[in-house]
Structure formats: structure tokens, C-alpha cells
Length: 239
Ligand SMILES: [Ca+2]
Ligand SMILES: [Ca+2]
Ligand SMILES: [Ca+2]
Ligand SMILES: [Ca+2]
Image 1 (cartoon, rainbow, N blue to C red):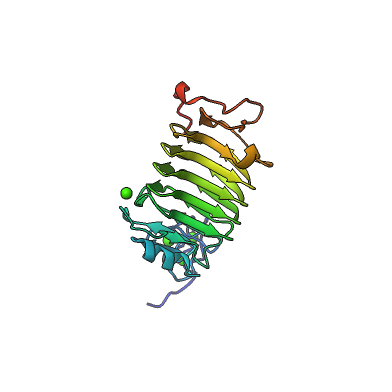
Image 2: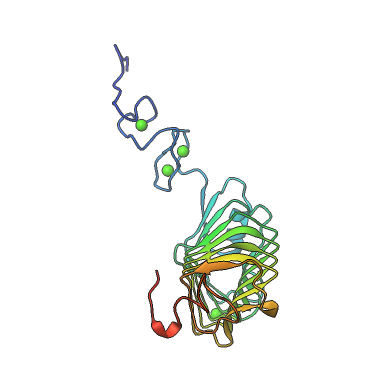
């Protein structure tokens, strides 16, 4: 088709790959929506999906995947670690999209050794020796997960990061911290049989946080509080 005269240009968001849509332009973030949002000629680049432990490890190790989404629940994964510190797992989002990663009472659900700046969200992690285990890992964000029925729910060793809006319940120990400084906000940490919060030698280092729900805090204090802001018996829905 030959275009004569000036091409149609909208007042907003024009002169790019979609002149009729202001939200589609080269400066915008690519979304997982089946269209090329950032006008680079690729649709949904950076988003990858996986449906098994091995598959997720491959995608988390793939430099072209910046967001890895779990599309199916994994039940009774036998013996070994499900997500075992993939080499390239840095600066990524691992989004379980509400699916479950369930073990058989041993090993670890998600294990990161020396990994940083990741977000792990929307996962249900159950029936592991350690549900989420961060070791020498910094600036990771654990958010909106349900971590239930493990020996240790979230196990932090020489790591710092953020735990936010997780439900960490019915484990033996909910949050275990050793040599770690974390920001811990708005978590529901209840019904854990030994401790809700537990730090090695009761040393929380420079950890701090607020608006948590717990009953057995082992020296953990929300900012300006003694113990958690809410006790489990308060039944406060904090998120
Ligand atoms: Ca546009
Ligand atoms: Ca694109
Ligand atoms: Ca897109
Ligand atoms: Ca199981």
C-alpha cells in the first residue's frame, strides 16, 4: 500500500509500533499479555513458563528469562532439592502463580546459595525439611508465599533480604535466622510447633520489621513492640 501525505499519528503514544495505543511504546515495560508492548518486535520476551522442578531450574538458568512462571503444582517431589540454586538465578522473578511445590518431608523446596536480587512470590511451599533456604544470598524478596508444614519454613543463613506478606504456618520453626539481617513485614507466622520466629542464639543482628502476626517470637520484636504486633490469637488478617 502506498501512503500519500503524512501517516496517521495520534496525539498520544504515536509514531511507534502502535500509534493507536498510548501504553504501547518503546519506553514501556514488556508485559505478559500476548502483544509487543515495548515495540522491539518481540512478543512477551523475558517471560518463561515451567511446570516441573527440572524445567523451572532450566528456565531460571536461562539468561533470556527474567520472569519464570510456574504453571502447574508439583506434588510429592521425591528426595532431592526442587529448585537447587540455578547458576543464573539473579535479578529474576520466580512467580509460582499460586501453585504448590510439595516435597516428601526431606530436602529443600527452594535453595539459593550466593544468589541475589531475586523475587520469589505466589508460591505454596509444603512438606520439606527446609521450605525456602537462603544461604549467603543477599537482597532477595520473599513475598506473598504460603510456607506450611515444613520442618523449617524459611531458613536464612548469612543472608539479608525482605520477607513480606507471607503466611508461614504449621512448620516446626516458621522463620529461622542465623547470621542474617532481614526486613520482615506483615507476615502471618502462626501455629508453628516449636517457634514462630527463631534466631540462632537469639541474635537477630540488624533485622527489623513491623505488623507481623506471631505468638512464639524467641526475642523477635516488631518495631517498637514486644514480640509481634499481633498475636496469633488476635486473628488479625493483615493482608
Ligand atoms: Ca503507541
Ligand atoms: Ca517486546
Ligand atoms: Ca507483551
Ligand atoms: Ca508431600
